[in-house]
Image (cartoon, helix red, strand yellow):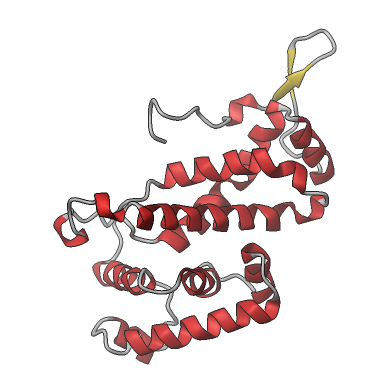
Length: 223
């Protein structure tokens, strides 16, 4: 999280609620979703902390799937923005059963907003991507890392809706219905977007010396 510019998100130690006497008492981590939603809509701090604990990893993973290697991105900031958005708009959610699906859609929306913001400000960039240092591979196999980077270089050139659909389906591994819900579109629409993205990816990847091997070996775009 960027220091100084943002308020910290609730931490796990914040899982406490007021007792009738005004003192903080420990609350169980696992609340049923209906109660959690009610408390979120009331603005209870412990409910915000529980939401973050339950869905923080999911939101970050989806953001990373969509954003990939874009160097302008600080994933902690994207996660922060996603939860700020969730806390502000939770009153729009009426069915607690849809909580997980709703958080996926918040993550997708926030990641897309980050991409649009970056493109709108791209004229401020003083260095091209190849002039910037590569992030550390963190122990990843070099070939795997290379395939990962090349995949996302291709995806960065896609129309945003196709890029998101491809990432959710083939990299995150969502079912079609889950991807459609996360994007807020119909099943037919997400199928069309995935089909267009798949055709675009295969056409470009077949001309790439690294990705062509993955396609020929049937690795199925999971760098």
